[in-house]
Image (cartoon, rainbow, N blue to C red; front, side, top):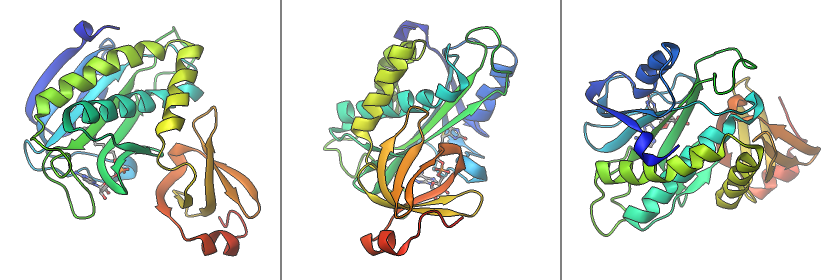
Length: 261
Ligand code: BT5
């Protein structure tokens, strides 16, 4: 896929760019369709959470990918978009956000962007490239909710939404092509490991099922799961099972007897 193949659709207001693009995907839209909005009236995060941004203050974009890849490796779509967005931030704001597993871009410990990848639910094992993955990114330009950050807080000059979008899509064109081969997906995972701000940290991972795992974030495995070294041994947590990942104190690791839920 080359940069020229992106088909960018622009909206003043849309409920959610991910929702709009998922509908197009279900109608059979090809890879490369992109939705970008000035404002979302129902922007979504993971697990029914909201993505908030006043009009024009945040890059709100979703891209449609159709990688020829096993379902277990579709997490590399999230990685490719997170890495491309991080690169675009470095290019235009002079600051390179790290990737906080599973789906945040952070500067220091503050969130500057969130990534939401969703599939159209097409049966895996169909024709190559038949599964659609819509990957949405919200990246704060010059506004942030409390506790988060924006590019303007770190950049010397204002960062324009369209410049950031262009840089992101330019880098993503190459990265998206990598997703079609095993070697390319392994290279994507290797880069994600190198840029992952979570690895080496003491973390408490709260799962959607209500459990928690506390320990040292040791590795991202081949399925994109975070391997946490707990007092009771290694526990691998899948991105889809994580509600929150927070820093934890070292005493918490000693106190924890491995997964408690
Ligand atoms: C995410 O979810 O971080 C994924 C966000 C994806 C948003 C994009 S925008 C374009 C596309 N269309 C959509 O409808 N969505 C995608 P999650 O990890 O669940 O984080 C959500 C949490 O981030 C919220 O509960 C808030 O605490 C926080 N949050 C909301 N708005 C934020 C903002 N502008 N900046 C930083 N944090 C925010």
